[in-house]
Image: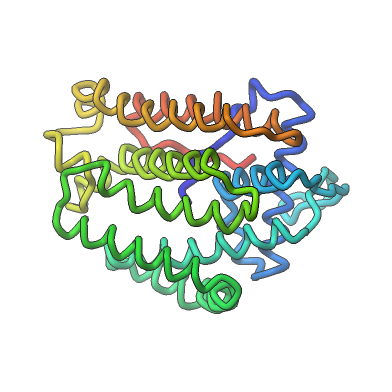
Length: 290
């Protein structure tokens, strides 16, 4: 995933902030334990959100212990302990990382991404696929559908974003298990749609310069990003906010007892901040680690 599903740390209760950071660091450590230390650089906010949501829906507390990070061996902090849900999220993240590299190689002919996939990700991806073959097949199919739409220069934002939205729907089914109902399914679908559109807005200048497909470049004239955002702000805002409002409506229908504060902060405030940033920043949005 892409790193836009982030918390609003300034408006987060301290207890929620420390719990969220423990989830993030715990996921990072679990990736290192289950895959390799190099794979830990792929730890994302998006997968951290999925881990929090999965624990909340399962009504399971994540055990947390004091520990140190490879980046800071002196200062101890609370770190989430490895558990079954987290391991499942790690495997999902690994499968996604592989297909993200495949997609980037297909789009950019990127030698570096091809090398990273082959040298670092591929062997861990093969292990994850053995556990979740149906998920892998589904993601592969949807990425191929997306590639076909991109080759056709599809002008419909709804059609191209539907591919990643359906991927997120399937991921939710695997990660959230037997409690996965229609409200959660719709939330994951709209979240996937929002993430795809957010990434397209963020990448529009880079895609224009490289001559790459971007659904917004198919629909609007482009000179530079500042002009693009100024001239099309209302249309872009409508696309992103429609997804965002649908996510909030879906979340209101979900009953969770654990980690509600973290989830509310991310969905109500963090994603709204991300949307506003995307609509005003001419440079790419930075995803600063927690």
